[in-house]
Length: 254
Figure 1: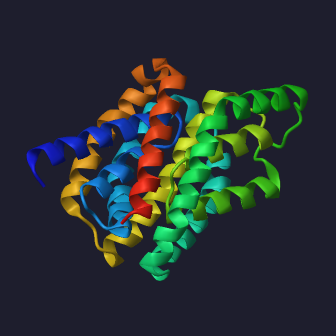
Figure 2: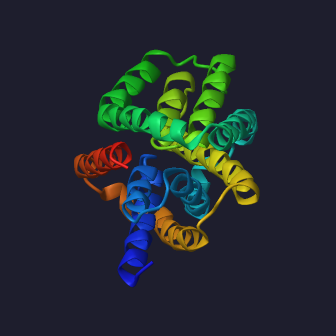
Figure 3: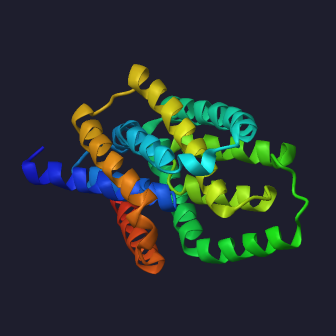
């Protein structure tokens, strides 16, 4: 990579780390950048997943206060995320690369829709939580299965996994939204970590990309837990949508 390419990947890592902590769509920033630099789609996805793990950890640390007192919830739902993440990662490696190129544009469209409707989803979740103060502390079996399914999605690709998780948690668990956002960050980290662990030993990883995204996402994770909360949400969603569309076009034309 040229110096300009390295700066582009590093900057994308910062943006992704920040966005993942706040919303959960950082892959829609880094993945298109790697495609634009000529990396094969599966290699780009694998390297992106490995590189974003440190940023996910940074975001979890930034929300450590909100995680206090949620040990049982994290253990229950964390098990579902780990199982789902393992299944998704194995599917990514076992299915043909052509299948990934065919499936991911659809997943990106789903992710973009989730990002666009996130404000409405948040309002609906708030009304639901206010109307139903008797939601189970851990969300029940239905939430566990839904978190497992989101883990499969996250292990396979992962864009907007955080949006999906915060929507599920908000509907099924009665708690403060910031505490649920902390749980979302933790569950997404588990999925990415386990997927990355599998990829490191089995898949083709571009380690220079991993290093640049890792350092950038660590910085971005801290920004997302502090300054990032002040970013205009409309601008943030607009950027994500534009970048996501670029990724779809790139996948369909390569």
